[in-house]
Image 1 (cartoon, rainbow, N blue to C red):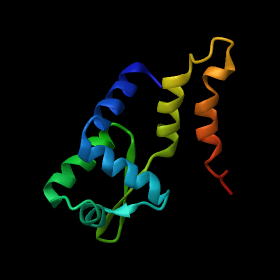
Image 2 (spheres, rainbow, N blue to C red; image 1 turned 180 degrees about the horizontal axis):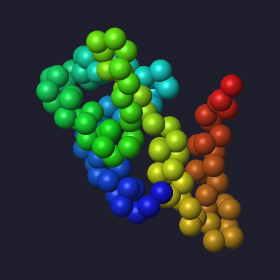
Image 3 (cartoon, helix red, strand yellow; image 1 turned 60 degrees about the vertical axis):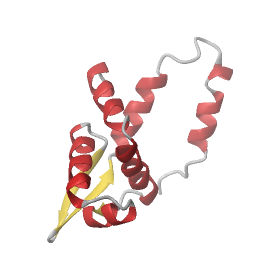
Image 4 (cartoon, rainbow, N blue to C red; image 1 turned 45 degrees about the vertical axis):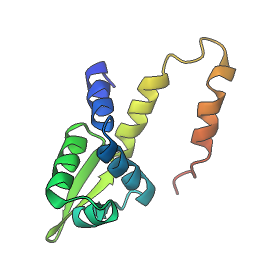
Length: 113
């Protein structure tokens, strides 16, 4: 991931409403959630939610797909992985104990089937 893309992604997350949306979509998994359900779950007006979703989409953190009349949003896990990798790519400098807590966090995620 390039620095500019990482900066855009981090900037998108640097807002209380958007980080809530992002964390919700990470929790619900790859199936995602309709925009209206996201707005209801977070008690956010539809127009505000539309803006939040657009910013997160432009930053590459989530992706929309159409399902009939609904737009389903899901976390873009490859982009999230790329962002996390960018943040820690220079970690350790030969001292793995520095990154051990990060590796332990990643280990808690189940492997894809």
